[in-house]
Image 1 (cartoon, one colour):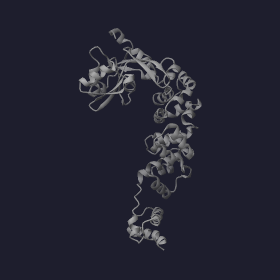
Image 2 (cartoon, rainbow, N blue to C red):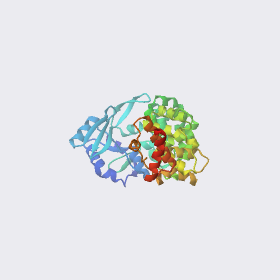
Image 3 (cartoon, rainbow, N blue to C red):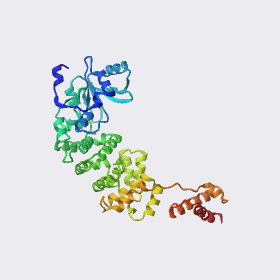
Image 4 (tube, rainbow, N blue to C red):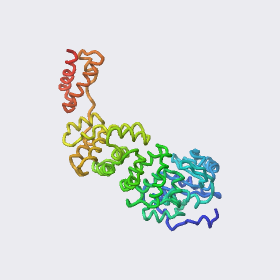
Length: 423
């Protein structure tokens, strides 16, 4: 690229306060790639977040160097090179324990809505124009100069998520971009209406969601549910018929909005599984549908199943019953179920009785059941089903008594549980 070409897209914006860019592992990596006739820049989310004053997490690098040259340079300087996506020009560089994706500039020459065939190049504008949204196509050199080829800075200033070029074409290249459109709107907009052209393109391409793997859909949805403006993003998704495509059933937007409020009222961090339960769960059968539709993990499925069982019977006011439920379910499942009940109730997020119920795990830790098989063997019981029944009876009596730890009372509980079996 000539010097004149390299200035195309240069903006007046700079990353002036970005120590992550000018020092440390990233700076050393870019210094290796940005020399001897090749260019390298930070691209995408890191630049976007830095300009917004948000935390910078994953840092991606684009370069004019082809993958083989990237690998050669990395290894020559003692960095580890992992060809994680070599067909797409991506090499993961590991520098001092930090991983960075390094991708050669490219353009898509063939797409089918899920995968693409690419050709490597040296044109920064062409590389920017193949990306999804304008705010994700910004790049920055190692001195902090920001390049914008597609109007990303203006959209970032307006807190607007907009497809690059023809929205329908961008979606046809990868139908997951439908969900990404709403996820990025939830994360980076001001909570207003989504871009009209983008929304219409998402509606037109919604059948393409069936071509996306359940794992990719799950990943995008879980991120969306945690975003600051998730509610005003889910509403147009629901109105457009897209939410039912993702969930395989109706979405309970009121319960979801309430869940975001009661989580905060209980002093809890946003939880994607809990929020998914509020959005898509009313009866136990819904848990199985969601688990299949989104290919949830075993742990996520178990939480949804637990949320769906018995939440309608939960109400504040009986701390003894609440402690028994916490003992049976454990803190995570207890909190999930109570918050789902609260979210579906008529109570506000300021209801003190519900808050006390939800925060019980923060105030009380359920003790371990202090009796065991040895206590019943010592009372003359033989191993077998009768001993198991006695243990279960003793545990229930201990719970009913309020989890006592007094030795005399524990002996009495054990005696009472063993007596019917022995006699």
